[in-house]
Each structure stands twice: as structure tokens, then as C-alpha cells.
Image 1 (cartoon, helix red, strand yellow):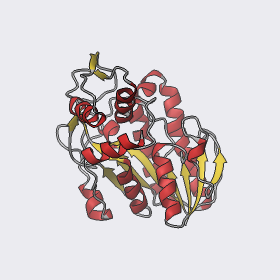
Image 2: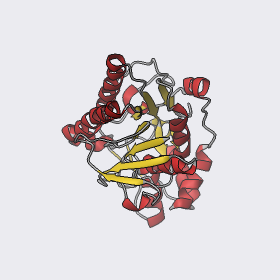
Image 3: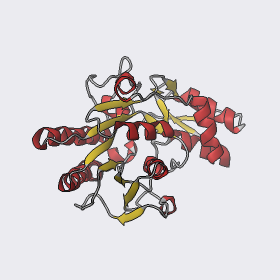
Image 4: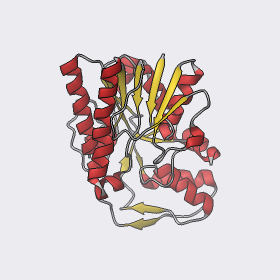
Length: 292
């Protein structure tokens, strides 16, 4: 297969590139290096340096669309920029796919799209985003659904839970695991916004890669998460324990755009894709710590 990976020099995208190359696919990376790193692009992959906010052309069987503005805080401060990347960039990708007859596997977000939930959200749960990031991702999903209706395409949407693992940047607020670990490693203060009892569903990056590869050609919407909730306070405790640091975080005022409870029901992906998470949070955190 000839696969294009937008954002292929970024966190999740670079792992997808490695997995595709490992199984023998021909891979093209599309990235503008606004957040991705050039050294993550393997020599075996073709590189197209491009900003997806502008139209582009590629030749591919499948486009794994992982390029995104993925920081909730940035989306609230710069909603226009967030929409340019996450909405306009997705439309440009859909048009690039339509021109070459490719299918798209789109990296969406479960936590930000569903907003606050009362129980693990399945794919039919009402979408009530509480951040500009979630709104933009939901809008991009509607474009994908619309293109499937209008043009008879078979694009796929993956709604990821809170992804963590090696290569995640501690510079972005969404990467709370990498932020905690980097600060614990350097001896800096760790911050928790609010009381820390807000919950998230943390899924290890290798699991997302498996879901992405398994979903190609499925033409569906799938949650990708563990179904397990962990409070931010508990996450900090686990990270500190792995780092060998005995220190409590400093609490700050809650931030706009943060949901109180976020957890996904991924039974559809298990049933239809044969995908299920296998990495426990403790093991995933240990692997991530080792990468630091």
C-alpha cells in the first residue's frame, strides 16, 4: 500500500509511519514541522514539507490524517488558528484524497468531542464539546460524513481518548503525562488545574497505531480508548512513583475548556475491528518514563 501520513513527524503520526514501514508499505510524510521533528522522519519515507492549511496533491491508497492543532488551551486562545488547521486542513486532505481516489483515516478526539459525560461515551452519545478544539474536530467529522454521502467515499473516523507515550511533547498542555514526567525528571514544580478529581481515559500510543492500521477500509466511526477512568491526582501519583519522586502537585484555578469527566466505550472497535487495548496504564507509564 502507498500510504500518506499527515503530521507524520509528530507524536502519533511518527509511530504510524514506523508501523507502516515495518509492514512493508510505501510511506509519504506530509508535515510542516510546526510541531513535528524532522529527525523522526525515517530515510525510507518520502517527505513532503507542506502546511495542510493550503491545498495539496498526493498519490496514495490511504491517507492517515494526523496533522492537527491538538492543544485545548491554544484552541481557546486562538480559535481561528485552531479551525484553520483542524477544519480547513481536513477539507484540503479530503480533496487531496478525492483527487487520487484514496480513503482517509481521520484522527479525531473522543474526550473533546463528547465533553462531560455521565458514563463511558459510545459513538452514539451526544457530542457536546466544551472547547474550541472539540468543536473544530466535530466540524471536521461532519465534513468527512458529508463527503462520504456526496461522493460515495469510505473515509473512517477514529475518536481517540487521551493519548500518551514516547515522543509526546511536554510543551503542549494536552500531553499531561509527558508534562508531569518532564517536570518530575527536572525537579520543576508540577501543576494540576482544579481539584485534580477530573477523570480521563488514557490510552497508550501503540494502541492507537494498531487501531489506525486496523480501521483502514472500514468506513466507520470508532472510539479508541480503554473504558477506564483515572483522576489527574491519581495519574500524578503514578508518575511520581515511577519517577521515584515524593512530591505533591501545586493546584491552580481550573482552565476553560477542560471537561470534568471523560471516558470512552470502545466496544464497537473491539467488535468490528478486532481491536482492544492491551497495555495497562502502569505499563504504559513505565515505557514512557524509560523514553525520557
